[in-house]
Length: 317
Image (cartoon, rainbow, N blue to C red; front, top):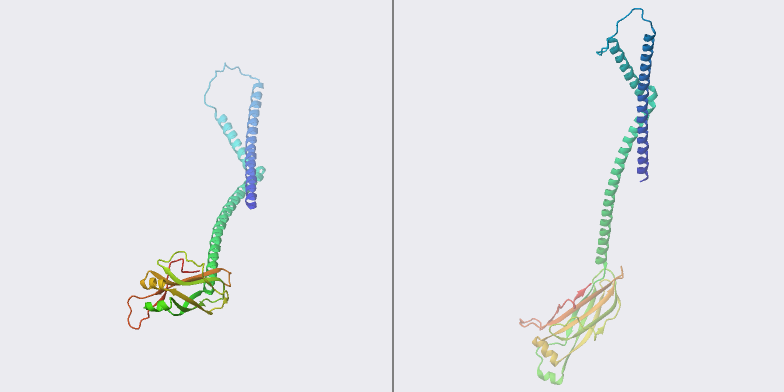
């Protein structure tokens, strides 16, 4: 901006010098012409005076006034006067006395051209600077996105992931005789299950709960964790397996509803833990349903666990 102001001031000064030089040249060209006209008039007046002063020795007749073409001498004098005026005009405009003015005018023209070219270059530089700024901003934005993506990739690859697996389920069988319910009104058994860290960094478990009981279909949402068995909050190293066990019970009414398909025997819960990078909280929610196949081939199990359920029961973040 300072350079632009400098060149603007320079152009104004050069223009002022150019106008001053033109004015001086015009004044110089006008003065010699006026002097030439005054000299010519004075010469003509002196010649007329001398002619009238000479005595006339020969009587002459009364002259007759006649207006006609000028004589040859008069035409020659007029031509000489015009030639003298033109020469004086040219001399006054281009003579040594005006050389300084023409030098200033030439300098002003050169300064104007240089200033205009400099302004054009400054404008081009500003345009290139604006383009470069846009390119730098785009590059910075792309670099930031790349860095964020790389950071997210590292976090996702190196973060811990906790998953549940059912190892063993004892005590349940199909076709329990009615007589056994009289002697023992409850089915009881044991479930063994594990939590495993499949990630590449430790997980710090700080909250969790599990439930195993019969629920009428369909599963209510959100899941109810009010009466539950709490998990032990411990850090889990990568590939570390935490083994757990839970006892379960089922009365005759729940058993009948599960066998008929009116209810599901469900094992569900959640685990909350933190990672070691950004200390972010993660959650693993699971839902496993005891499935009783209607058609069985010889050798097939009477039941199996299927990990499925509504979105509020299954979540991994």
